[in-house]
Image (cartoon, rainbow, N blue to C red; front, side):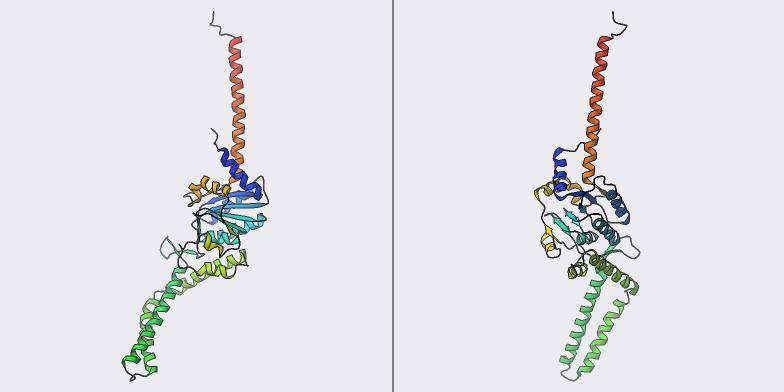
Length: 313
């Protein structure tokens, strides 16, 4: 049995791809080296290559190296590429957005900061590369506050008996006493690893879009959490070309709702226009075969009329 694709779906894909002269691709999955390889193969296998590309992306993020590969490949394979975001496009997904020539963001969509997710030590879960940096920032602020309060209180309460130098020494000793046990829990190698990871994200962003500069810096370390929502309005202040979807693109969002609001559990990576074309060809072939079968059945019935069974009188 052939797969049935409603005509309005076929028309929607056609009405988007033809005006943009673009191949449409769907990527609903984590960003990994394996999925990046699959995406490259999908693009390479397109039989009717157009000048531009549209990528419909839904992802919670993943490997920045893989995101960089995907984006560079698209920029080399096509004159321009447009990114459609109809749901979650976080972390490494934002890195792909940096390289896009245009970003289409719906009301349900959200990008996220470009903080790299790294595996926790002795754990399979991931944490934000910003976590340790933010912890150090808080620690620094608290130590300074402790020094300040201790210094001022010592000078004030002693009514001048304790001079400024001695008060500073006392405050320093207290601040160091607070800092030492906490700082002792920080692995300097781990700190260096996280710092390098954040640096890699920044450098990838600069290579994909050198004109963004400070905006990439903000995406890397300018937001308070990994889950921070960057909606269309926020994105307009970060990226040069951001717009809301057209009516046809909103129809596409509705058609693909189940796989573009959130990434699917199993990778869903394929060419939308090629998929539709294959289904149409399959349907046409099946219709021809059904017609042949109907004709054969009619001929058999006619034969039965002209050549009655020998058992008949």
